[in-house]
Amino acid sequence: MLLTGRRSGLAERLDALQEVLTLSHGRLDPAVVAEAEQIAAKASDRLRFGESRTVVALAGATGSGKSSLFNALVGEPLSQVGMRRPTTGAAHAAVWGSSDATALLDWLEVPRRHLLGAESVPELDGLVLLDLPDVDSVQQGNRLEAERLIERVDLLVWVLDPQKYADAAVHERYLAPLAAHADVMLVVLNQVDRLPPQARAGCLDDLRALLKSEGLAAATVLPASASTGDGIQALRGVLAKNVDAKQAAVRRLSADLSVIAERLDESCAGAADQAITAADRKALTRALGAAAGVDVVSEAVAGAYRLRARRATGWPVTAWTSRLRLDPARRLRLRDEPSELVRTSLPAPSALQRAHVDNALRQISDRAAGGLPQPWPQAVRRAASSSQERMPDLLDQAVAGTDLGLGRRPFWWRVAGTLQWLLLAAATAGLVWLVMLFAVAWLQLPDPPLPHWGPLPVPTVLLVAGLLAGFLLAQVCGLFARTGARRRAQLARRRLEERISRLADETVLEPVERELAARREFCTVLARVRG
Image 1 (cartoon, rainbow, N blue to C red):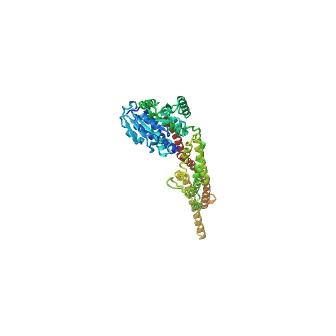
Image 2 (image 1 turned 120 degrees about the vertical axis):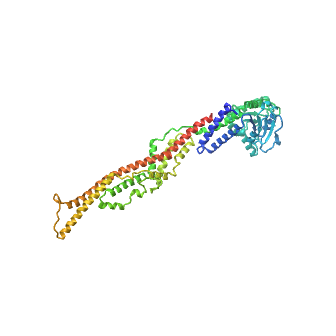
Image 3 (image 1 turned 135 degrees about the horizontal axis):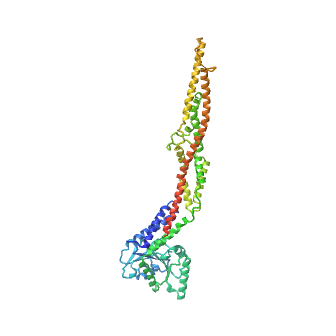
């Protein structure tokens, strides 16, 4: 069946509502989301039955004469009145027309049905008229049944009587909350035959003024008397007009969507008037860096560089003692080859460091959600803190997976180390030479030829120069090592901060931005629900 313009528009609004529901879960008040889901489900079900049938319900309080009015409209005493009326809470349906309404009535869960041929009242062909239980029944089941059907029908006819037409319970609980449904609501002042003409007009004026104060000025008000038949034809004509238009269902569902859209629209008031600043990002990175132990790691990298440089370039006579010291990087289980699969032995964040992280997260969420109504500030805070419990592990992985430069050994280490061993070899050669000369002299053997370098014997030069040059070279290499250690520590710090900054983006800033984007999409789609 082709959709009418209004129905196709309603279908588009329902599609938009489904998108809104997808964006609402976990963010908005569950009660509001559940209400929207019920409306979406009801609208989807109702549209399946098409527009050929118009469901009208007579609702009202005890003694308003609903059953008498129902019988008058049907033309048969189908619904019992007065004290004989059953109290099972089951509604009674009268169905005009030859087309089958079984599926629709099954969906409405109305067991008591009476089928009327289209020839009885041709203009009502397609009408399904329900006589509901009293909305103020002493039996809760009756009230709940009435409220259930009030939510499902296409057109509501509220039946009031002259004595209780201003009953606060009916107006405050039912009529006023349905102000947005005035377009699909009739109000019948029944039993007007009990009023003199002048009082009747005054009563109707008073009722219209009361409805206007409740936002129901657009609701049609009709006088009627089931006992005398006064106004029955006019009421039947209004019903026939709605049946012929075949738009009551669409108007009712459209009103339902407008109501839920208005409730959801409260979440779109205001706008985010602040953006996350570079200072906020820097503060978060700094707080996470402190919690990750960036200072400890950079100091360990510097210490490891100095220690390894001493081992590689130090004076061999004393450099071996450095091997007795534990490598600072090894102590923290920082590997030369980075791997996120290996845990470090860095200490866990202190309470103060965790507090600084919490403060930075709160600052970012407050900044991002500034000016937004609930529940978005709460949702943004939740997004910002979504990885907070896992953050120590994530930070440890970030440190373990960062290339700290520990695996790179400068070329000058090799040159200096080779030179140190050459100098040590020279000093050793000079020492051995001198020992041999001492042995020759002690044995009083002929003196072998002894080369000189200037006034000094070559063995003495080799020993003294080798030892002195090796010692001096070790001191110079120590100076270079301290400079290189500072640079290597700065490099490690910079890489750690870059890695932690990316981690902050992935675990905090991107979730916050996704939440803000979800809100923007939510409000955009909600505008389509409003129509």
